[in-house]
Image 1 (cartoon, rainbow, N blue to C red):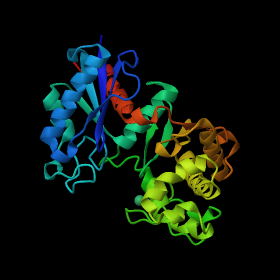
Image 2 (cartoon, rainbow, N blue to C red):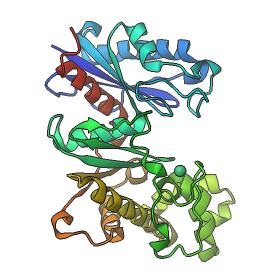
Image 3 (spheres, protein in one colour):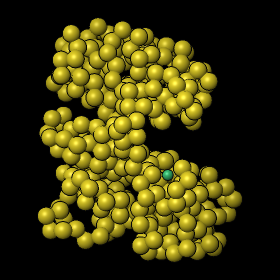
Image 4 (spheres, rainbow, N blue to C red):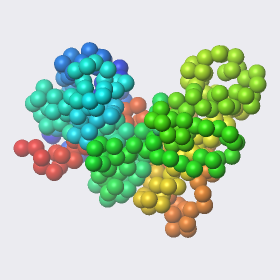
Length: 339
Ligand SMILES: [Zn+2]
């Protein structure tokens, strides 16, 4: 039996999945091991290796059965997994700067390793979940979390781009001024742009822009009384799901921003599907359905031929990265890249 592994290296945990050659998942749900990435590459790569041993044992197979490993990490990193020389939030240890994490893991495990950034891995999983591994279809995924990640999958291939910044959807500018109910708002992103998708559709946007803006419209709101926007931001999704008017307004604006963004994608790629995922909609189905209907409501009128392009919610959100990385590994296995 040939098997591929998916390894999702997050800030605190490594998440694993295992898939057989015929696309059967050997691990359901989360299979985690502490990441220890703050302690640098030597310790972190050992942790990844130890965790893989545990995952393999849990699935009842041997490590020798794993032919290819797919790895995904937060960026910024090159298309082939060389981490940014400037360092990043998730890789603060000095030894990570400019580190080739793909090659490092390959040497550690003695198996071929393929690399995706976490947004692209999530997008590949969303695509696979809808269409399987070789459908020839095209999809765009937006993953709404602390920031906004995602990816563009064209005919089953991840668009990685020249330097690995393909699918950096969060920093695409959108015509937010046309969204109703946010007159006078200047949504600024950490990247320096005003009005890109992440500045309107992320947990960070709720904290930095929407709460300060909407709390003035809802004087006496309980989130204002908290006096802590960081804490308050994390409560908005749950309160929106329970029907709080201000929190619904915030999510409506985010959905309409996504609608404008997806409209740009429809006209650029004419895709088979648009996919939305991430913590923002890890909610009950009723709220997900409402959010998707608001995305549609936020889209300009589509031409007749494209009006039926569906918006889907990404399944298995918390394991999307590992699963997407495994799908990328499966591709290499099928290309015969492994002896
Ligand atoms: Zn930005």
